[in-house]
Amino acid sequence: MSEKIKDKFFEIVDSINDQIIKIRRDLHSYPELSDDEKETSKMVKELLEKYGYEVKKFDTHYGLIAYLKPNKNQKTIAIRADMDALPITEQTGKEYASKIDGVMHACGHDSHTAIALGTAIAFSKIKDSFNGNVRFIFQHAEEGEGGSLDMIEGGALDGASAILGLHAYPYLPTGQIGYKYGVMMASADMFTIEIFGKSSHGARPHEGVDAILVTSMIVNSLNHIVSRRIDPLHPAVISLGTIEGGKTSNIICDHVILTGTVRTVNDKIRNKIPDMMRESIKGVCKSMGAKFNFDYTFYYPELINEKSMVNLLVKEATNIIGEQNCIDLKDPVMGGEDFAEYLKVVNGTFFRLGTCNENKQTCHPQHNSKFDVDDDALKIGMKIMGACAIEFLETSVPATLPNELGCFAKY
Ligand code: NI
Image (cartoon, rainbow, N blue to C red; front, side):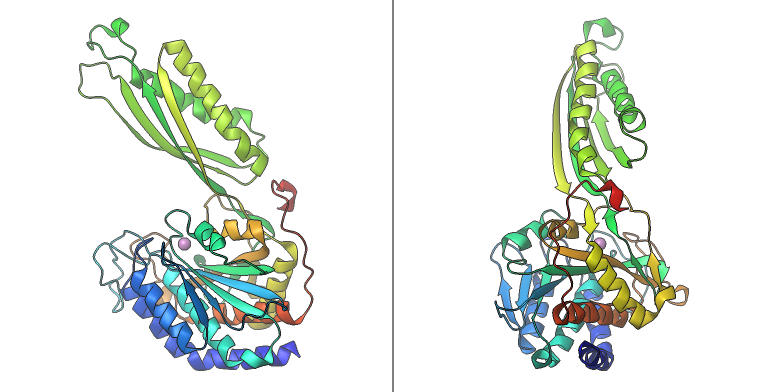
């Protein structure tokens, strides 16, 4: 039964493909930054309403939740797309290149929005022939802060038992997807360290407390945490991104600010790192007579794909693109993605959609001014999303509990 529904769904996807490519290119031409996705959100809402969706919008942000046939008595699967762009000046030279100065869809969220819209349109056309509910989450501010948390707070996952998401991926050719069991992406946290010393004449350092020297020792000691205090079998990164301090060459500096990021793929390690950092900073400052402030913010958790949902993805993708084109990514990456927040609430899986095509210059890395997505990947994304959702709703994929975190053993 579900195979027939899927065949019909695929037929519809093929028939609307040109429309979706046009939407993707229009979105690409008019990108909007995080928390500024006003016109994108308006276009998405109007289009979904045209196809019979009930769309919930918010006063505080531009995210949307779209319901096809809200029926509380049936299983619900959610499909999420992010809509925001980046502050980068596009250099692709393509005819649909960004028309907005200094703003660019350099992470492929234009393709994510277009794929989710196409999937939604195709579902609207088979509305009465499948069981369960499909819900679409068009999320604001993935590149910014808290987009997914706003959506969850706004009810995006209420009553849902699973979620699917994808990301355009220039490291795989168009026609392939990448999947990963367990931890797929790292947690992403941020920190700021402020060092307070005492200024004095550069020729009389003994009368001051040199915040630059203290900072250099802190930089050194922070780099010992990953190499000497964390089990080498657990990947972790502590990177300093900025360092600012000092007024002029002959004054002992009294104030330095450092910022950086921490990445881990294990919650237990993640929770220990701020304390380890604080101990190191405190020890150095104490020995040198300096004071400090240390701010640590937990941002995105690790992204953990649930086994039965990955199985479902691999099975459906194999039917669509063939086993040889479904690539087990095996290793997690240390990049972060706020889809991880949804996966802390319900089971689901995120996957990589290959978009590299040398002939179309779509193999540049994400967040690069020449990044673009191969439009031929869009229908693969729509078909896989659709088939997974149909299969999930039509069959009884085991509804296991959300993952226990800190699951090193899963990858
Ligand atoms: Ni992205």
